[in-house]
Image (cartoon, rainbow, N blue to C red; front, side, top):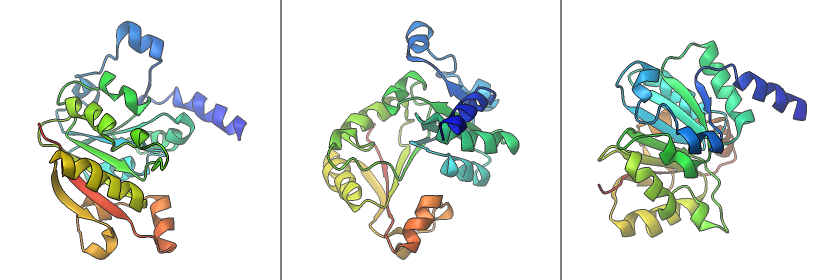
Length: 221
């Protein structure tokens, strides 16, 4: 397993669409594409982030179905992200990139209003550490500056605890505009992108009879 990780880390360095910046480098000179991602993609199409992207399955799938949008998967696990970076390079997908960093650092990589949508798919529900949940007020405050006004955030999870927490303790009390919310996505009849793409683990959860929850909301300006 360690050998495979080292091989993947080495191959990651060859991918032109995978960005890895050390904290020291970020502190000294910043990130050159911050506010300028259009120069990498070669267009001004909307940017969609998948936070905690893992292997990048959702990022890749969204990009295949939405060629008029640029998609960036963000995660700290380079060995996992290798899969998505490799696939997107092999298929020569011009609208896909990956960023290896902690989500706490997201503001160092995107300029004000540079992002048009965020997807958070099956994150760690952090049952004992609510403040570390990717939909906690702490993290939403990090997303707000980089999001274009009125842009949506999507949470898709098999954790009813995380769903209830996000909807009842964070989104609703803050007065965010809930566009859609369901505790059982595939029984709801919803026909948006949330049902058009399934990850490996999502398919496994469904086979086990677990309900997939989904919230789409927009933050206040």
